[in-house]
Length: 489
Ligand SMILES: Cc1cc2nc3c(=O)[nH]c(=O)nc-3n(C[C@H](O)[C@H](O)[C@H](O)COP(=O)(O)OP(=O)(O)OC[C@H]3O[C@@H](n4cnc5c(N)ncnc54)[C@H](O)[C@@H]3O)c2cc1C
Image 1: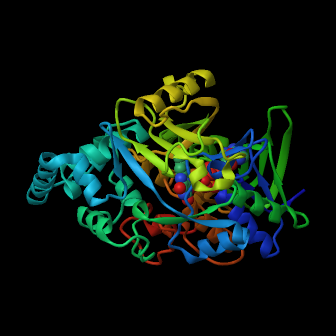
Image 2 (image 1 turned 30 degrees about the vertical axis):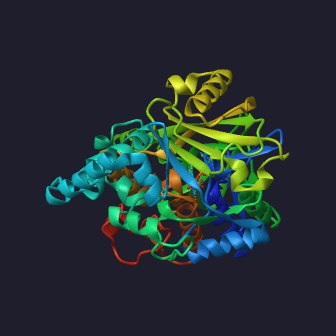
Image 3 (image 1 turned 90 degrees about the vertical axis):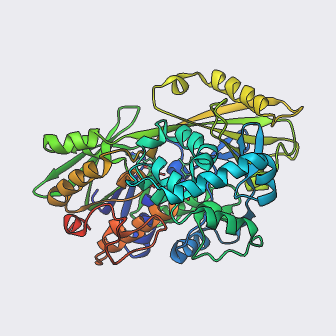
């Protein structure tokens, strides 16, 4: 049966768009490939009553509209949590955000002096062409601080050297951060942050759903389902997008049982990865567009959740593991995100995050091997003390991170030019949908605005910045110049 809008993917972007549309009288079908859960990367996994995220999900946005929507969906079930996080490097734990005495004690006098001298050198003789993330960080912090606080962790996350990562990464993730702001933040009283001026990486507090982020998206899906003629359909992977005469006519889905469905609609919204979308086009696009899709890269991700027979384990929400001696990149303690994430008071559930490429050595390890690796690395870091790992489970997440390598902008532009011409009733939104390495709030804002475009307004979705703010002006950090993007809405 034909609906007003078919949405591909029941993650934050797709469900936000769907919710906005049903509130405004449109019939919506959301097609989700996962057989069990909505929420996408922001889902919550439940293992024997222990709940965990795919990486801890902080709810923080500079957009009041997004914050209000979270409150509208979950009300009092949105907890306000204080943040405690540290960096583990070279056998020491550094507070992050930095605390002056702790940083000084860990670095020692000579190392601190070297950091200051290196910083001075980078200010006097900056790298002229800031092409890579390495250039950007060294110019802002100096070489030594770059080595301690940025290089190893960033390379674990992306799997490529920092001199091959685009400066766009810094623009997206640590925009506005400088040594002076980090030091200023270190000396200011706790929790006095002005939200507008806040730097995301340094925030002291965030909101978090009582039972994890999936709770938010299950509620959004429930509200869509409660409207007549609207549905969220699980176990439906879109693998064909049929188009003709400048617009999409229908999408086709399949599942593991071989069942196929055909869904027609007036409008389509996609949150599926841009590369998969190009592959699914029927008829196929010209060679240059297909190749642009194939040239987009992703970083994949594994969470190893370990149950520990200890009531606390450690006090942080999470610890960044910069130390190159172990493979784990970050460790979450979900009980410290919300006490409701565990089924009893005597145990904790730690989420060990491994960044990898689909098919590489880590990805191909069996679950047992990964649980064993995680247990050994916890011991090596010294977090376990006398406690032990009593159980564990593994979740593999393909395409967790869209990669910003050389050329990714050009490939996206090639694809967008084609979509604008050939598929005028399709909008791409969200993280992998737009190949934007952003948080839920960005995904949600693009979802909201895509819905409003269908309701008659004219937003350019590429004008939503990483803080989920809609910029009327053409900002210098825009992905695609306006003239190339006109008509895409
Ligand atoms: C480790 C990690 C930590 C993070 N931490 C935070 C945080 O602290 N705070 C925060 O706000 N954000 C965080 N994020 C980002 C957040 O997860 C994403 O921004 C958000 O989930 C993006 O929403 P989305 O709907 O665009 O995409 P997704 O969450 O990827 O959802 C897309 C959905 O589409 C489905 N899909 C894909 N292809 C198809 C297809 N062909 N057919 C049907 N369905 C399909 C997928 O199964 C998925 O359910 C984190 C991400 C990671 C990886």
